[in-house]
Length: 166
Image 1 (tube, rainbow, N blue to C red):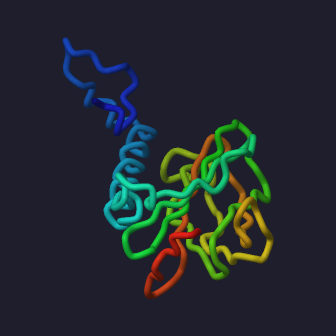
Image 2: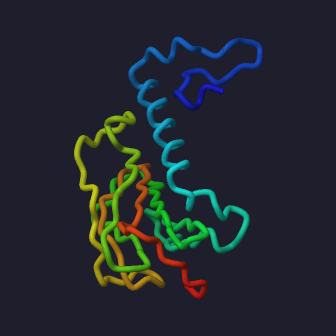
C-alpha cells in the first residue's frame, strides 16, 4: 500500500494513499525500480519457476560477513544469480561464486541513479575466472554496492540442463 512508490507515511486504513507522493522525484525513481523489478521477474522464469522444490535455489555464499549470494534455477537449467550486500559499506573485489566459465550480464543494480542510488556508471559484463569460492570452481569479481543488490544471468543462447548433483 504505497511501498511500491515509496510513500512517505505508513499506510493507514482510515485514509487514502498519498498519491501526491508520486510527484516527488525520488518516489518516481522508486516506482521505476518496482516496475523494473517486476519486468525482471517476468523475464527470468528462474526467479519463480521452481519455488516449491529444492532444485529451484542454491545458496552459494552465506558465511560472508558482507555478502550473500544464491542462484535460482528454472526447469531448463537456466539460472539467475542474486548477490546482496547487507552492510552499509561498498565491497570492492567481492568474489561471486558461479558454476561455469563464461560471461555474465548484470541485469539489475539497485544502486543505479535511475532508482535513486548514486552510481552513474558501472560494468555490465563480467568474465568468470578459475578462482574458487566456497564449493564453486569459478567466480566473478564485482563491486557490491552498500546495502544493495546485483542480479546476473549467464550469457548463453541455449540453457543447459542443471546437474542435480551440483
